[in-house]
Image (tube, rainbow, N blue to C red; front, side, top):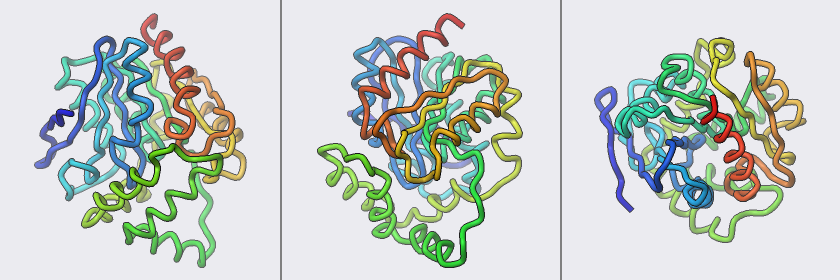
Length: 264
């Protein structure tokens, strides 16, 4: 495994690349790292794609401290990776909190982005009750508690190597919890304010059992409505990370979408 770096805002963004073909750039959710896509990457490579999996700023092997973790800045990081890999055009895939970043990137540089995929995106979230808010605050300050929380996002079963992945994830979070809080901190503009500017193909992927949403299907449809043209697909018996708990089904939907972006 070769880890590459691209310079951004006084820090560096880490990524690794596998395969050959049209470029796909993967960005993970809060607290995770590029290994979140360890089961999806080989499937996309086998389908004929060049896949770059990125450590979001403050996470994994990227620099630990940044002046901002706003999705617009993370989107700029993804564009910088695509530029470093020859200028694309690239399809950008954002999981959870990174689903906002790919929208900003597509709106900012349409020539560099051929399409975007939001996996389990958040259109909006009601204000939690005080007890829940206190629990969330604790989780976002403790790598160990975050690891326990992360485990709950797999209600339909976990990958066979999940325990080992989570142990490494928690270890990498030490000294980096400010970044975890940063990528989910409320900022303006919200990604929904830029969504109508996106003219590239858009795919929303959501697990049917995603525990982060009372009604995952409704959330997927709400995300789809933010764009001028978009498609939403549900991954059966999947939680918040379909690329981890249902990688084959996720890859099938992604490859179908990637063929659309190639024609576009």
